[in-house]
Length: 103
Image 1 (tube, rainbow, N blue to C red):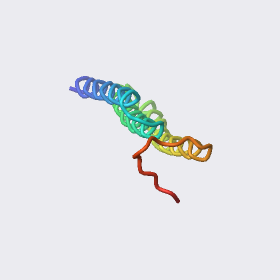
Image 2 (tube, rainbow, N blue to C red; image 1 turned 60 degrees about the horizontal axis):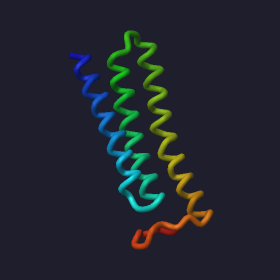
Image 3 (cartoon, rainbow, N blue to C red; image 1 turned 45 degrees about the horizontal axis):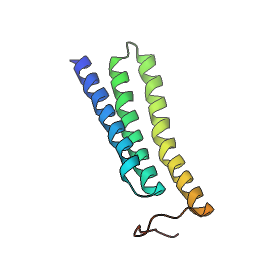
């Protein structure tokens, strides 16, 4: 039963990565693409991590995987925000019709 749950997690992660990759081609500007990819990556890596935790044989390995997963969940959104902010500061403009929130 655990192998089935892990397999479902891996298939879900494949779907998340595939959909985020399609977003690279479908979304109009770099900021929308970055948002789509960062959300897909966060979900995909989360599901891969959960599948690996379910399949890991020892508690020590499960803890290590969870620590890596938590670090990724904390770092990925922050890095995506920093890349988008850097692009905005450098003058990369979104496409016409995209709403931009100014601080």
